[in-house]
Length: 312
Image (cartoon, rainbow, N blue to C red; front, side, top):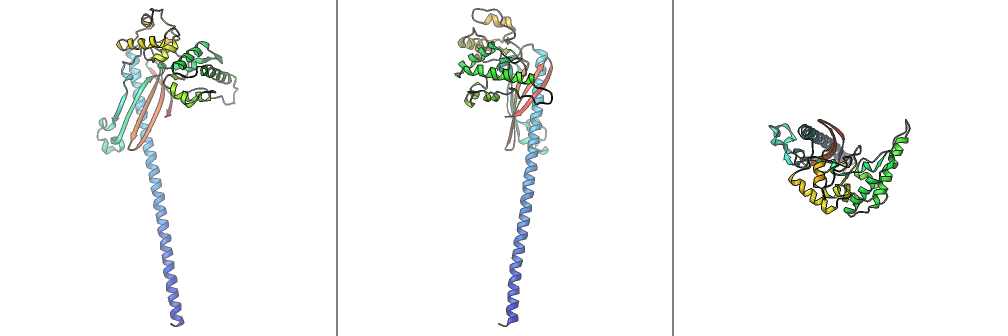
């Protein structure tokens, strides 16, 4: 083969390799662009689903507040036989939205939720007032911990922590961040000796509310009632809870008449038959994405206020 032919063959080989490299580079760039576009589309879709879930739950919270307002108009007491206490089982929203399949994801949305009486639980905000430990409340918390088979010594430690937080908040000066107080049951993990196992055991029986509150005898568990009233044993409290299934307590006089030995009406600062605070839980699932939130609603008369909302 002559030199010109060899040179031409080499040039054709170089051209073929160059073409293959350019083709590979082009394919890599196009694939990268398609991948980035797919990531962006998925991100936008996830954001849209998140917003849809938030709006559905916001509507559910407004619905819950409406139920509580209507309940306050027609009832002076709160008990577990009222409409607000009936949980909402998993419900497809297309049952209530006309042409939901045409409007987007409403047809695949499932909503469930419940309203719980926050004053059915022992309010641990009562453990201290103005930076001073409340011994009566400490003893009530000790009785509850004992009934739940937990260390009663945690009650005094928790009260001291709550009191210290209140004093620090009262002594804070302008421009200096105020210390974060106890607002959630999980905050008790800051108390020495309190573990996640303890939190799981007491979660359904205690709460932190913005102010001191009594326990609602119409909704509290036997453990909470026994802790709240020192003369009431757990067995007697269980029997008392059984009587309210037939008829709820009309007032404190009615409660006193049903206590063992027909005692005088209990102190209204310790026990009540009505509630001002409710915990609303909502859960929505759209396609495979689920969002669950919990909110605290404050009610005074026919007026309700949403105090906080958090994901759980």
